[in-house]
Each structure stands twice: as structure tokens, then as C-alpha cells.
Image 1 (cartoon, one colour):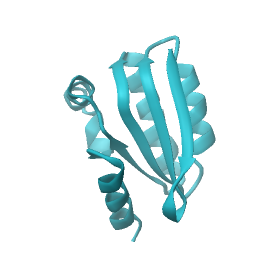
Image 2: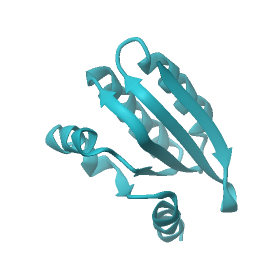
Image 3: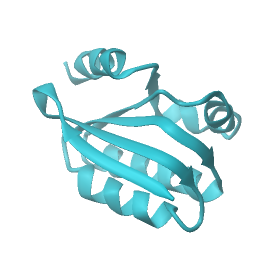
Length: 116
């Protein structure tokens, strides 16, 4: 089961909180949330603290996120990744496309620097 919530923070930053497992059955739900949220010129924090498993389907969604944001001159910071998720994204080369932070506050700081 996957839980997704969206919140707008200061400076129109969108916080997309995701928890659960991202696999073949839940990836379409995350994909839909990303497509709805990743509008042109958006600033997004993707809170991954609650993600305990991500299959290759989840990695494909992350690639979609990168491409979606790149098209719209948007920025994203991945926050709070558990070590196995971080390691998988690093091993596959996906982390080169994303900035990461440990929490919302440090993610907001990175977005402010990126948006200037």
C-alpha cells in the first residue's frame, strides 16, 4: 500500500510525502501524483522518509519525475531517503539527477539556492 499526501509550503514549494512500498502495483499511483504536481516552474520536495521498498518500477517513476521537471524548468529535492533506497538509487546512477537532503528544512534551503 502506498500513501501520498501533498502540502504547499512557503514560497509555493510543494511537499509530496510518500510512504509505503513503490512496486509495480503502486508505481502508477505515484506516477499520477507526480504528473499532477510537477507543473512547469514548480519547486518540489519529495519526502521519501516513509518509503521502505522501491522496485525497478519505482526507479522508472523517478526517471519520469526527472524528465517531467527538466521540461518545465522545475526543481526537486529528495528528502529523507532510507539507506537501502539511497544505495539503490546511487548504484543505478539515478542520484546524479537529483539533489538530496535529510529533512524538509535542509531541502527548502537547497531549493532556495537552486531557484536564485
